[in-house]
Length: 286
Ligand code: PXP
Image (cartoon, rainbow, N blue to C red; front, side):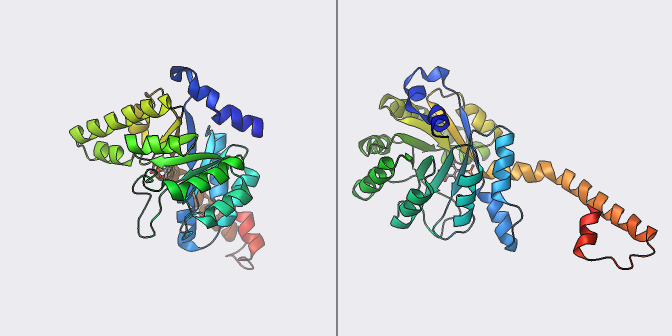
């Protein structure tokens, strides 16, 4: 696992010609947990979703354990680490509690993100420049434990230089503002935002940082950002889970239709469903 992780996310690929590096896909399963938690049960399971993502070609799995546990929960992280045979990227706030969890679970990578309880999602980048003194010991602690630290920042010169000064090996560039401008059709703003991302990726690569990108990506924006040779990993969640719902709903409805039709015909054959209704009966319907 360790040698596999190194091959997937080590510095050699980032420091060699960027044009040759493979673009990895990290699938974020947070919103599978959002749907699960809406009912408080076990379905759908983010760990099962991670297994499917890996089977379909994901290079790694990303999950954000938020302070308020609104989607991913502690046991999801433990189960992901135990069951998924790909690098786990734990997104986390820079708090004592989260660092302790990371030290216990030992994910392949820890992506430090800003977190505010009232936000709907991670709305801005980490202020690596303004929080140097707070971040420095935490980054060091994670690094020393062999966890690959990534800082989720805007593609700004001050933030990139601050990440390098903190000796974080990786940055993840926040693509949210650019994606929003693209989706809303604001061409000029989108062009300016993308220029910032391109310049930031080059600068970070030049400073020896491995460059990832994520937030708000869809098929179109992921395809565009894939053209930046310095970027070696994309982390994508919300759009993929949305697509899975839209693309997978027809199959789920077909299976439900079949289950109901079969239940009806069995019931008719046995004389109106007498004695049916227990767990064994429901099992036999599927
Ligand atoms: N990268 C980071 C650091 C994030 O915080 C998130 C959102 O959890 C993502 C990537 C994925 O963003 P999205 O769900 O919009 O694809």
